[in-house]
Structures are given as structure tokens and as C-alpha cells.
Length: 149
Length: 430
Image (cartoon, rainbow over all chains, first blue to last red; front, side, top):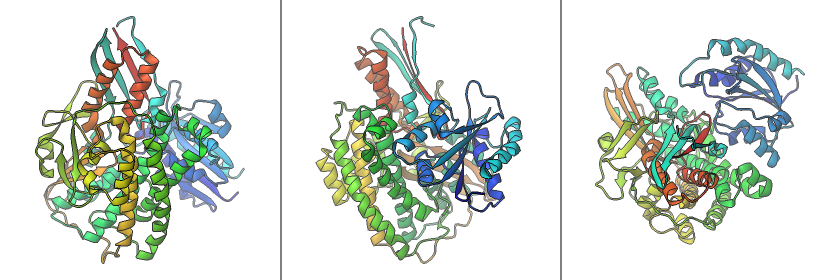
């Protein structure tokens, strides 16, 4: 286990599937892993820059909505992918924009990995839809594997 | 559908927080309508709060908005404390005001540097601006961080502060804990004054609007965490009568409610607040406003960026005063025992007057909740201004017109919704 890893779950759990990021982050937090810092409740984009700045490794988990979304599909991205690919976050943060801004201002972590989950319902309400909830355990395992890399 | 309809999808409008769309319909030289379609979270929260304990709205409504959680917490506390007949200690009110100053700094600086300044400096967004003028954006982010630090110290954390509760705080700092904040704020003042000077040099279209202003005022200070309702022309009214004067109604094109003030358009937010409170500015903020060319009132929406910058100076100056005068409260909170009844609460969110109303039952549960955010109050005025703007600039091509509409919408800093998607602008020419 490499110390100094920050896990950031982005999303709003009052917006149904948009809460998948915080839900995953909380499951990781429950494990109480040494050297792992878990952040949720970031709902304002520049807070990401503060969390990234000076960090060694950052893993971000976010919901993705869009035309070709396959509910529950998990994808892994790196900072380089984010530049090349328009990832449409269901969240207001504009993660790709923050990534570009972080690069312009040299406020990126040494290594940034993003896991996204395709979501189906981001209306106001509580609880994940079945397909997204079903993706949760697998995603937790993927992140744990990422941490032990 | 008219074959000449052109749809302009405007990704830059994503810089307005939230989701929504602007649809402008015109035939020849006549603008039929300008409809801002917004999707608003308070409606969800009003239903969500029913049946919850009377202690819960400050925490839960703080999550309506990632930019202004303190505003939601404070308006909710004001309303419920009023319903329960509790007045909190002056030292705790001062601490609330100090926390709120942090939110003003954070929210205004975010808007000035990352959303609004690129429009005036000719950049499509803050990223391109940062590539060219890195030091300028860094200076803004440093200034914003002063607000975040203030919120972290008092609120427990910068986003969705967890240290706020009915009657006050879970824990309060001692004087020594505030000293580093004062040092940081003194440094931030230089950046804040620099910001006023910078934005005052921008080019501003020569335009003014006539909407009525609605904002809180307070004796001998600029209203923030509470106040009495004031307006630019009509008679003032009590907070408890807010819903008799500011009436919300459903309109077909939006899930949000449109509000009018005694049947007319009104505007709340920095321009209204400044115009009704400018006499109460602190010395440095007043000097900055004068040097930036602001008079006693400001009716040019584009110059709202100067007003925000002046309000940042004010918030820093006021925060420094509050820290200098700070005495650790004898108790972190006043007990607020449940009492059946109705309470009304207001405060000045960065974007304008935020009203909350709660009805508490005999069982201490919320029977009804009403939240009137600034953006729904401003919506009619925004739409009117957009229609005027389009009518006056019909000669422009779609791209230029779209760009002008985007800029103009950002003048109002609408908090369209948190945690949301994309805005599109559609111009229908028939």
C-alpha cells in the first residue's frame, strides 16, 4: 500500500445516481486503510484543485450521464484521457475543465485516476437505481486493486 | 416548426452553475419571448423536509447549493429560531456573520475570476485565461482560499459546513484560534483591492435597467446574516409578510417558480444590495467603490462585477473587525426548544435575498417548508433584460448574439441548480 492516496467521491446523494461517487468513497472509508484519505461532499469545482494540489496520488469517482450511457458501466480514465475525451459528468463540476485548469496552473496531483459509472437517473431523490447500486461492490474492488498497485 | 429555426448550443453557458436553457423567440424585429428554463432544487427540498425534525433544515438545506451552504443554514436557523421564540446571543450572531463573510468572499471571487472576468478579457473560459494570465487567476484563487479558510475554521469544513446548528454552533473558537485568520485576511485585502482596480478597468456596455431593487438592510452595517426587507421604491414590509409581496407562480416553460414583487419585476443580489446599503460600507470598501467609479447606486448589470469585488473588500474588512472584537461566547449555542408555530427567516446569500419559512407541528416535526431563492426572484427580470438585449441587437449574427446573451446571463450569477448538467441557448427566428 502506497501511503498518501486521496479518494474523492464526487456527487450529490440527493440526486439519485449522482450519489454513486460518495457512496463508493464511503465504502472505502469504512475500511479505514492507513495512508488513505477519503473526501466526499465536494460540490464546488475549485475545491478539487485544493485537494489535488501537492497530492501524490488521487483517485476520483464520479457519475457519468450522456447519450451512450450504459447504466452501471464502470470505466477507468487517466488525466491524459480527460484531455482527449469529453467525459460528460452528471455533476456540475466540469471535471474535465478542472483538470485543464489544474494543468494550466500546475496544480495537478502526480497521478490522477478517474473511475466513472454510467448512471440513469439524476433527478432529485434518494437512493441509487438498481443497475448503479449493483456496480458498487465491483467498483470498490477495482479501487482497492488500484491502491495496491 | 419554422425551417429557419437555428439552434445554438452554448457550452460556455455551463459556466453558469447548474442546468437550464434560454429560448428566445422572434419574428422579424419583434422579440416574442425570452424564456429561461431552470430546474430548481428548493422544490425538492420543500417536500423532502416535511415530516423531518425541526432541527434538521439547517443541515439539509445547506446541501441545496455547493456554493452557498451558509446562506441556507443561516436563513433556516433564523426562521426556526423565530418560530421557537428564541433570540441567540449577540456573540453568536457575530460569529455567524463572520462565517457568512467567508462565504461571500469564496462565492464572489469564484464568480469574478473563473466565470465573469473571462468575458471581459476576451477569453472563452477561465482555462484559456489561466494559460495566458496564470498569475491573475492564481491571485484570484488565493483570495478565494481566504474565504474557504474562514469557512473551514468556523464551519468545520468549507463545503457544507457541519459546525452550524440551531441556536449557534457545535463548538466555537477561542481568540487565539482566530489570529492566523486575521493575518491571512490582511494579506487577502491587498488581493481584494487589486481585484477592484482590475475589474474597474474593464469595458462596460452602457446600459441600465429599471427593475425594483429588493434587499435586506441593517442599521449601521451592510446587511448579511439578517436584516429588514427594503426596496428601492415601494413601501418596506415585514419578513413575516414576505410571501404576501413576493408571489411565486408556475410558468409553463420552467420547473422553477417565477416570483414577482407586488406584481412587478424585481431584482435581488449584489446590485440591489449595494444600492440599498452603500451608505453603510466600511471606509476601505467605500474608498474602493468610489475609486472604481461606483456611485451610491448601480443599475448597470455588467458592472455587477465591480460591486462583487467591492463586497469582497467589505467582507474582508468586516471579518477583520469581527475578529478584532471577538470575545469567545460563553456558550456555543442557545437551546432552541421546539414550539409549534410558523417562522420566517431571511439572509443575504451572495446571489441575493434568501427567504425560508417553516411550519412546525406540536410534535416538533416540520409540517411545511417554503424556500424562495434569489434566482427565482430574479428570473422575470433576467428574461425581460434578455428580450430587450436581443431586440436591441438583432443585427448581430447568431454567434455574436448568443455570446452577448451568455455574458448577460452571467451578470446575474444565477444559481440555476447545483449538481447539474448543461445549458443550451436556442434562438428561434421566424
